[in-house]
Amino acid sequence: MSAAVKGGVILYSSPTCGWAVRNYAALAEKGVPFEVIDVKRADAEATAAWRASSPYGKTPSLVHGKVAVWESQVINEYLDQAFPQTPLAPASPEARTLARLWIWHCDGVLFPLVYRLSGAQEEADRLAAAAALADGIGALEHPAFGRDRLSPFWDGERLGLVDIAYQVLFETLDRVEDWARTPVTIPAWFQAWSAAVDAAPSIRSAKAVVAALRRAAG
Image 1 (tube, rainbow, N blue to C red):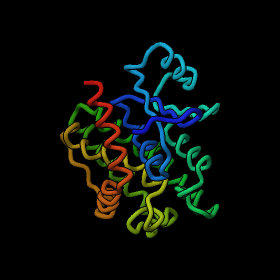
Image 2: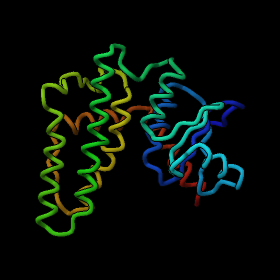
Image 3: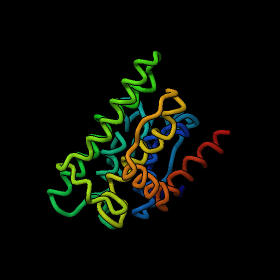
Image 4: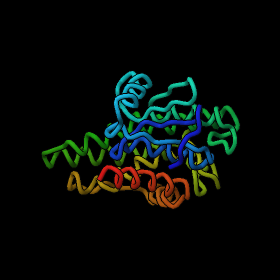
């Protein structure tokens, strides 16, 4: 976690904001210095600046000079364009579009299924939710998703926007069985992808930022 120079990157977050891991990882992958402000411990001036940058009053939100961005994936898309070194999006329009479809499937399909499973109380509901989540992951095996591009990361040898987006889901799935007491069938290829992403240096760096925030919060 680096102090931002004047006009640099400021990320408003908190020790419990799992979505911000996406942004810490993207910034680490690009080598961009940034400052994290914990909104739960911020003074009045910093709190006002955060609320001015976040229409929904949620974290994460980012300020870069006069630019304010919110929502973790939109923040990463902005960072990829504002700091074009070490690009995280694929080069071709076709591949960029496919990347966005994978990310939409993560946030628009899989996370709602995870929430459904974590909130299920009755055994029948848990089993149905677990099956739906397994089907949602299995949908990525449809030929249109082009799963064969995973080697070991989504776009080959280098971590990118899709991998970073799914990291939050991978971590969440590690806890699903504990939450719901119901196992979810996870394909071997999905587990291998999760392991490769987890071992990436920028992901480890992002987790270190989270750990530092938690230590500071006591």
